[in-house]
Length: 117
Image (cartoon, rainbow, N blue to C red; front, side):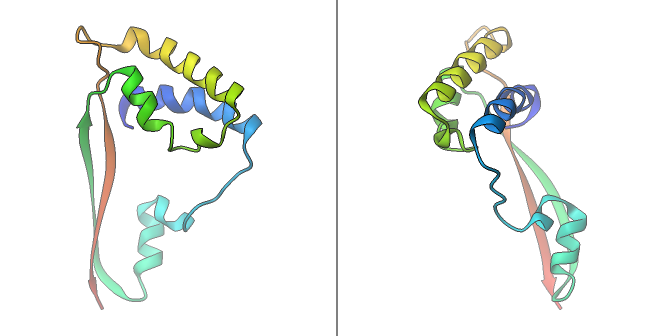
């Protein structure tokens, strides 16, 4: 998620997850930055370019909760921690809702293009 909605989501999730979950490092850490991608692709690719894309998303807080329930490791939280997370999240999102009850956020994607060397 992007923008303030994404920040609020992570600000609430991280402290709860820290006490509940073991650290999982998924994927190659180099894919988290442009410099890392350059190092990863350099031996076999040239003309590496990047484009950040945001796909607009306007869910209700409840829709967002349901969509995120199986991502960001929320599904690995205990029932108690998941209930705490949901309660805090929905309370924090309440003042962020528009007149239509929806949140303004999006999905941030990074397009990486390269030419084979």
